[in-house]
Image (spheres, rainbow, N blue to C red):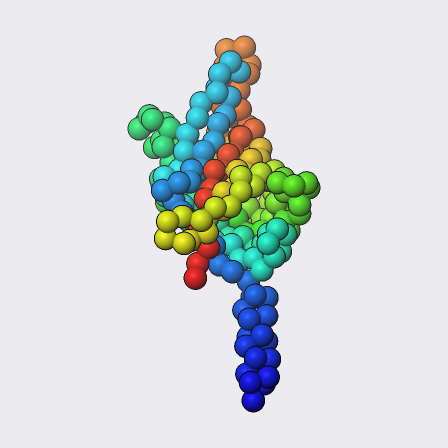
Length: 194
């Protein structure tokens, strides 16, 4: 009888170990930022203050991770109210009609010890494009409550014209006031759920 109980216990542990763990975003220790060249000479930066994300993974190296992320477009903040209103308008995000940006992963490939290539579908303004992020795993640690945290930094460049953010005013010399290429940087900390 003891052997049967022991076998059942081992089987249960193996089943739990093989189940994907859910990791939820710790927004207090995360950020979603972007930068774009202004008038060919400098970079203007901004951020989004409202976003959420989760991923599921059963493997310790996260290579089976399934990631879902969304950003509230209305939360855009570039430290200039007039510019933020313009970015929310139909010239750019058209936030009233398309209030969310979303990302759904299709593949998470380990490149070396702590670098990954994240592939997935990015949807902005109702348009979905395949997008790749270069990701660095900062590591994992346990807090005083016994919860496991994992930190990641992800970066990509996107062409805003691909997503119909096509406002295009020229400078006197013919250059773009706002460049079409946007640098996106995410610093994300996740907490493993019980």
